Image 1 (cartoon, rainbow, N blue to C red):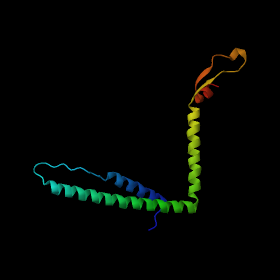
Image 2: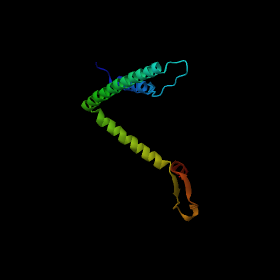
Image 3: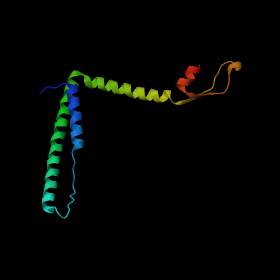
Image 4: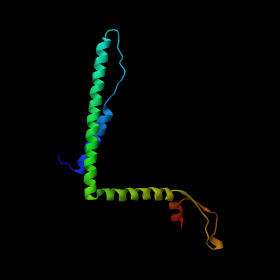
Length: 128
């Protein structure tokens, strides 16, 4: 079956949500009106079924990831993703630098010097 990379991402998200929705209950509570052995057998069967579902979903997820990785490599997407990751890191760094408090002492002629300017760099540049 051939699907687009976008659809593959949607399928992967759906698989992850389905795995999160599975419950793996390992304890059983019974009251005096229930048959303990029957409840234990029922809970064990439910646990076994959910483990099998999880294994199938995780297997499909990683098969899709592998196929997407091969497609990305063949089309050069991996290189573009690496470039995007680099740009995101640079943006994160420079955003942190811009909003960092800045203390700058004016070095203008004596008549215009005053106290140091404090505040975010964007505010200081607006003042200048």
